[in-house]
Structures are given as C-alpha cells and as structure tokens.
Image 1 (spheres, helix red, strand yellow):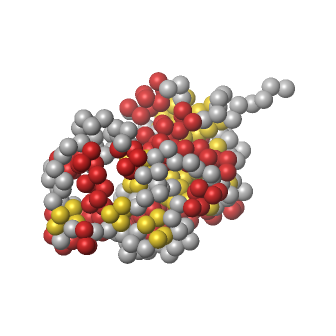
Image 2: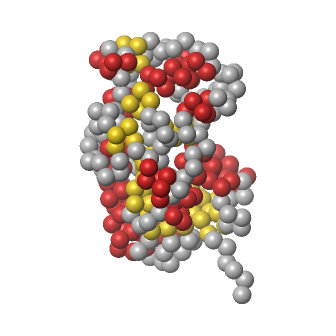
Image 3: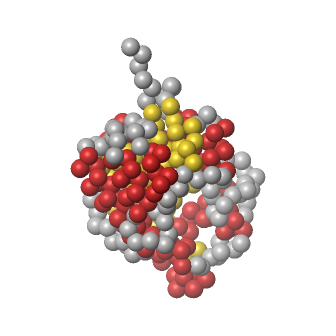
Length: 299
C-alpha cells in the first residue's frame, strides 16, 4: 500500500508561513487558507494549493473540514473584537471531521505585558495591558482547551519582534523618530523570521500538547540599542534619545505599547524541548551578514 503524504494546512499566508515551505520534509502536500490577493498568488507560485476564504465568513470555513494532518496557524485576531472569534470559528470547523494531529499557533510575547526588565519564562504571570495582547491571551486559552478536549497536540509560539532583511526599522530611523534615553529604556526581544519558521516546523512534531514556548534569540536588547545597531550597520544617524515621557508624547499609541513594556525572554524551553538551533542567535549576527547598502524596508 502506498504511503499517504503528510498534509499541512497553513491558516494565514504571511511571511513566516511562507518561509516554512523550504523547511518541510520532501513530499508534503501543503494547502493554504488565505484571502484572495498577493499572498494567494505568491503561495500558488511556490506550488501550494490555495483555498480562498475568509476567517470572518463562517460559510467559507467549511472548506477546511478534513483537509489536513497538521496545521500552522499564523493569522492575526480581528482588531475590532473581544476574544478571538476567528480562531473559535476555525476550531469549530476542524472539529466536525477527521482531526489533525497537531496545530501550531503563532502568538506574541506581548501576552506577558510589562515585567520591568526581568527575565520571563513561559510560566510567568500574564500582565496583559493592551487589547491586542488580551485577544492573544484569549486565543491561547481557547486553543489549549480545544486541544485538551480533542486530543490534538497544540503548541503556542510566543514570538517577540520579528525581523528580517525587509523587516528592519530603517524607515523609522530615517524619519528621526526618537528612542528612550538609556537609563529609562525598555528591554526588547527579537527573532529572525527564518528562525521562527524553523520553530514552527519543529513544533509540529516535537511539542507536547498545550505547551507554550518563548521563541526568541539569545540576546535581549534595550530598544534604543537595537535601533542604534541597525542605524550603524547602514550608516544612518542614530535616533535621538529623549526622556521616556517625551518619547511617549511623540509616538503613536500602538508603537508606544511596544516601547513601554520591558522584559527579557528566557528561551531555554524552546532550545531544550524543540531542540531549536538558531541560525541567528543575536541581531548582531544577522546584521553582520547583510549588505551595508540601506535596504527598502517596512518601519
């Protein structure tokens, strides 16, 4: 009898999901559930079977039923709701048929809130401050409960600031946006998009059900030091440093929600249990590999 190929479903087709494709075992059959548009076209060009749908439209979710052995869920929550109705509807659609063996959910380290620069493991208190982070906490709880009820091995990857060559804060630095002066600055954490994609694939096989993982590199940085390192690499002026209150008055509330929270993530669990070996253990190790020409990047 011929061996059936493993079927992977990508719910969401963003950058990290796309990067997983190069890491999959040979012969896997990959389907992506995405909205129509550039993401769908890019995935099709990579040989992925695309199912066009909308997580906000319950009728299209029926197309997910019985399609997969494993899932990587990278779609963000809706920004105008409480809880996580998108994930709830997706899990309901999956529950009505042959269940997958594992589901990996990309969450955010924002669920921890502010810890005053302390070292934060996966067992730390969730001090969620923003509506965005509260939606992620709701999603994590929903997913864990579903995993317990169904027996599907669920894994939660808590990612901090995701970067890559086209995801550096060059535009922000060019605009002269301020950073917090060193004595008041917050700790931030980072992960290269390739390393997060690698963690997603490993978690499909190695994660115990309901487990959360801090997927970050080995070197938390003061946020201003991160901006300085990028500026130095591309020959740009370093951002001006201002007192914390002045910076808050000059940046939009969304950006401030990232700048205000300070924590240093502990990544020992992801190294030990998923056996993740980082391609870029520090931001500096990545910047050393980049061309010194200023890239075209997002803020």
